[in-house]
Length: 365
Image (tube, rainbow, N blue to C red; front, top):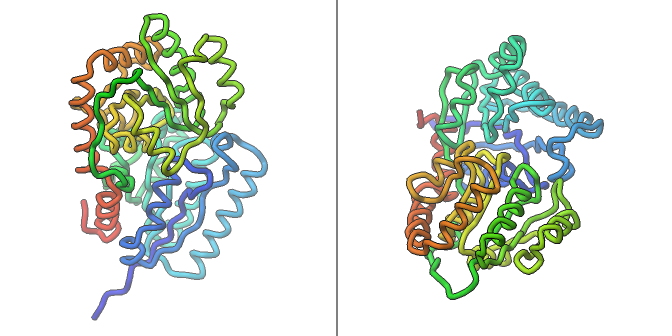
C-alpha cells in the first residue's frame, strides 16, 4: 500500500519585496522536486510594502498580520496538514505574529518546522524571564532549520531539540570561473539594497580613505533604494569628493547583474544586517573575491581563505582589506578559485533542495 503524501503548509515570506529570505522561499515554492514529493500549500507571511518597510511598525501591518493569521486558521481547519513550515523572525512584533501561527499549529496537533534565517533570538529572549519562557514555549516540540552551524548558538538557551543545518543555495547560472587579472583600474562592487545596516555608508567612508591613500579605483554601487535614497547617496559622494571614483548604477537584475559581477575585481558587503548574505554566494559563483563582516554564517562562507572577514566593522578595516587585495593579485586569484569551488560543492539550489527534501521526509538528522 502506498503511504499517503505528506501535506505541508508553508507560511513564509514571498516576494515582493525581494530580499534573502523571500528569495529562498520562492526557490522552495518553485521547486519541482519539493512540490512533487509533498502536497504543498503556500501562504505569504510578508506584510512589508517594500525594503524600507521591513522593520517598521504601523497599523497597516497589524491588520495584514491579522489577515495572514486568519488565512492560516481557515486553511488548517479546512484541510489536514502534517506540518506547518514557517519562516520565524527573531524579535519585535514580527516574532509575535509568527509565534501565534506556531502556537496555533501546536494547538491543532500539527508539527511546526521553524526555518530561521536571521539572528537575534538570544538578544530578544534574554531581556526578561517572561520573554525567555515564552520563547521556550514557541520552540518546544518544533523542528528547527538553520543555514549554518554557528547560528544554533543563537537559540541554545531556549531550545534543546533537533536542529537541521541546511545551507542556503542559489541557482547556478555560471559554470566556468572566468575571473582573471585585467589591465584596468581596480574595480570594487557593492551590490545590495541601500540600507545603513548593510554598510553602504561604511563603504563610502572606506572609499574616501582609499583615495587619500592614493589607490586608483572605480567603485560601482548597484542596488535599490532602502532607508538611503539615491539623492542622499549622491550628496555623500560629493561631500567626500568621490565623483570620479564612484558610479551609482541603480538596481540590477538578470544579465545586468551578471555583467556587474563579471567586471568586478572585489565584492564588498560590510554588513551587520545580513546573517547569511545570498549576494555573497552570487559573487562566489562568479569567482569574485569577497570582503564581508564577522556576523552570522558569513565566516563559514568566507573562512579558510575563501574571502576576507573583517575583524572589526569599520571604514578603516574595510579600506585595509580592499587595499590588500588590490595590491596582491595572486591572492585574489587563489581566493577566486577557492570561493568558486566552495560554492559549487555546497551552495547550489540543487544541494539546498536535496537537503530540504531529506529533512521534510524525515530522512535527515
